[in-house]
Length: 52
Image (cartoon, rainbow, N blue to C red; front, side, top):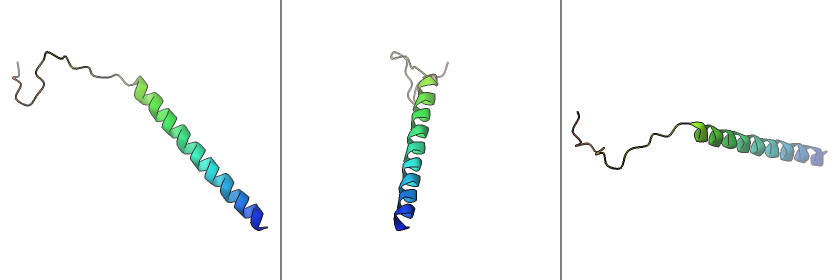
């Protein structure tokens, strides 16, 4: 009987790990599809850059 509960516990832990890995993979996919803002190297983007 104890082995049954231990196997259920192991199955639950494996399922939780698999779900976490799937969620991480989906997050990476979404991040890859998100447009990236590219800043020009010759523009001053600091705090003291003049506006206009």
